[in-house]
Amino acid sequence: MSDLAPGLLIAVPQLDDPNFARSVVLLIEHNDSGAMGIVFNRLSDIGLKDIGKEHGMDVHAEAGNAFIGGPVQRERGFLVHRRSEVADSVHLQDDVYLSVSTDALRTLLAGDPAAYRLCLGYAGWGPGQLEREMVAGGWLNASISSKRIFDTPVEKIWGAVIRDLGIDPAFLVQGGGKQ
Image (tube, rainbow, N blue to C red):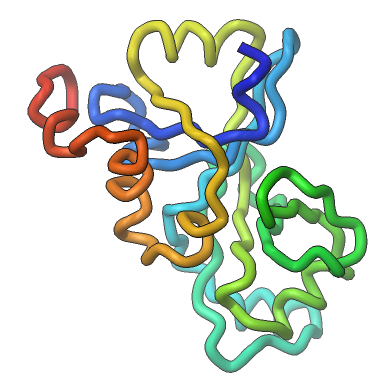
């Protein structure tokens, strides 16, 4: 299953974890030691302007809120973006990059808010945990899509990614199980 990362994980309604209800996760790493990913479709109530002000950084006038990247280390920020020229960026796939540096934050906050997602925290799985959850039917997987990460309205990402797989999301919801 090492071909899962980089990729997307889509939580199905039957996944019995409120941290991931209708979440789409950008899976960054997956190996024998476990897995790590960042949720990019759950808005937080923390404004990017507040973060910029706290760190003395300029913020684009149209900046919105940060995202809840996952339940682990919510004080830690991850920048998922589409700007290849940003220093200290790791190219994941398509035109999707990952940065964690303060310099990258400064550059991205001042630029187009549609070109990045600041995600606070991350999702982590221990050895074999993600595999067990997938076998139990808790997650679907897909390829990374910058269109879905950056261009699809946040509230429509989950359904759009599932439709991209050729599945009607209503079918999953009606499929029973815990919700």
